[in-house]
Length: 180
Image 1: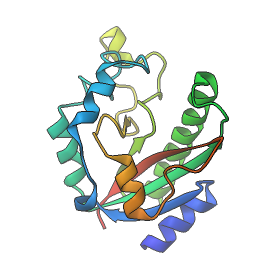
Image 2: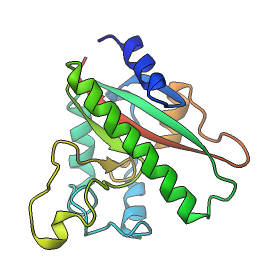
Image 3: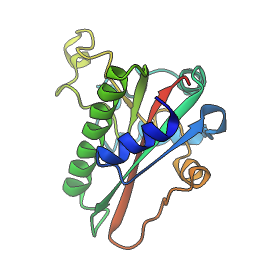
């Protein structure tokens, strides 16, 4: 499957935009990790895919850089108030569900890779870590862009994608990381 086919598949599956980048062009900024530690999402320390259990900043960066390319995925949502936690959480959930669906489709088409979400993994609720059990979906588990310390605005700019979509619109981003 070539890059244009991957981008077209993402569009067919409902993403507002998609682009391919080389992983070496992704900007990582360790100063994002403290946002995870603030635990505003409630997943810090209680989710295999979130800090501190997902790995160090350097380990997460190397996990991405061990592969050559990433399909950058964008969804755009009509949410008038970014402070509306219920609407924002629902939109992130739909974004991540679409990312997992696309991941499964790409893998079925012979493109191995892994997803990066717009929020921490929500495959299981609660995460098996809270019961001392192994991850139930290790092949689909996804960490968020912040856990990887990806500078999303710079990534969006690099790929020609809108980061700030205008009043009342919120964009979420994710990745499918793979080797070409």
